[in-house]
Image 1 (spheres, rainbow, N blue to C red):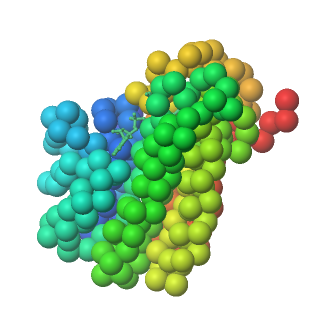
Image 2 (spheres, rainbow, N blue to C red):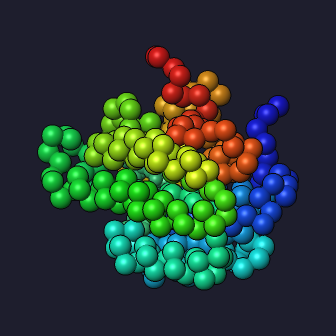
Length: 271
Ligand code: NAD
Ligand code: IMJ
């Protein structure tokens, strides 16, 4: 029998995050890892606000947010635009007054840079991938800092992937951006620890989301992953959500600057 916690039909609920307020970046649709995390933390009582990339996504995010208990404020925000980031935090301050946690589920590189040789990556493509996928964590945490202080501390989770430390075919410039993101997690954790603000990374195994579909050979990759992983399967969205809940909650109060692997054990294998 599977020991995995089932949240599909019998949600695990608690009041551990009751009264806690969180801001989530990166919901595009119901398959988004950000949405899996949102459902999990919501089941433990958290109240959420969502920042989505642009008006194109608003309706979908609105529909999803409506399925959660309570009211969830929604904000449009392209993380490469400093004025939009500033506006989000002004609205969060008006709506919530303070903030307890932040979820960063944002990555982007040009399609042409997710294949071929890394040697051929353009300066433009490199900078774009690093701006959206890594610098965004710095600017989002800076914006959240005063609101975390009002809450007496905070917890940040940023999604990452094994391609930051091992060469994964086609991950290319995203691998470099994730290495930078993970270093950012450590430096930000060091800066902010004295304010009781924790920053951690969650390294998920491959999940069939918008950002993963359409990648050359993704189906084969899922199959290889399943065959090699000690648990003999791929990770599920609910499992990523539950691990993020742990990192965002007081259950992980002694953990900061870490990268937690939620990959069915894949990373420990040597062959
Ligand atoms: P997704 O496509 O659902 O989410 C990616 C999000 O990034 C989207 O909501 C998109 O709107 C947002 N985004 C892109 N550019 C943006 C910008 N300029 N401003 C604001 N938002 C922007 O896919 P996902 O797989 O849920 O990805 C979420 C995170 O999980 C990413 O950091 C990704 O690297 C990471 N991750 C994914 C997998 C996987 O296999 N799917 C595995 C490990 C880590
Ligand atoms: C993405 C590209 C190549 C290999 C990949 C991935 N593998 C996995 C992913 C093996 C698991 C998914 N992932 C971890 C990501 O971080 C995806 C980021 C991403 C995806 C796209 C697709 C569409 C596009 N730009 C993108 N930028 C970043 O145009």
